[in-house]
Length: 234
Image (cartoon, rainbow, N blue to C red; front, top):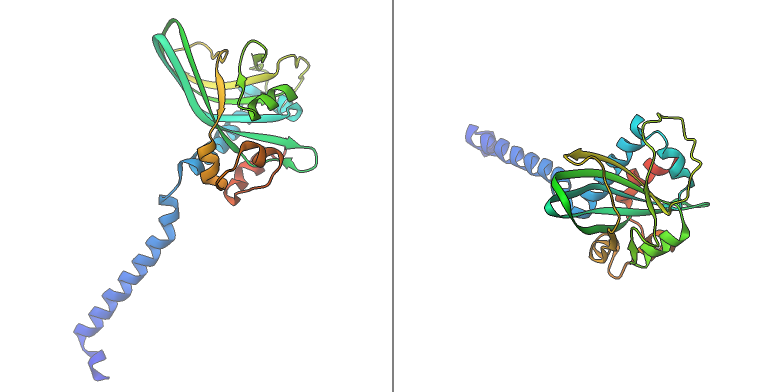
């Protein structure tokens, strides 16, 4: 066994051990590098929720949320136009149950088109509070379109945390949008909310529909824990 004591062999063994340590370290960080689009959206939804729920600009949002049947969180709705405009983005739907609390998130997309004298671009982080059973069923049935029979209104702004004097709940859906860009406000009339069945299947399993996730609660993903916990006080 004397060959183990030669300098050359000791150096080779040291290099081998260092290589194994590096490989082990890379193995530990590989899951973060492989973040899926679905998980990225869940994480961004939590960040958006925490940003808006804690903003003085949306001081009445907690009051609306506590009265809501469900909530939709869209971390990034982008609108761009020059006379003809369009908007869209991906988000999640979560439903409250009196006994079980907030559900796991189901994936949706918002799509709309518009024609008007619009020049500029706008990106918004948006929370929709769904106040009526009619609106929730429309979302679950993939028949949600703002405007007409499904009323949407902007939630109040600028009242400060703790006001929560929510009295007027005439609309089916209220929007709380934090925007950046050249538009003065956000209008969602005419926008449609559509299920992302492919994303729900990837994240929860083949054949999974929003009904299974938010109402029946047949499926779950442990990586939603931070988002669910963020909503739990409301």
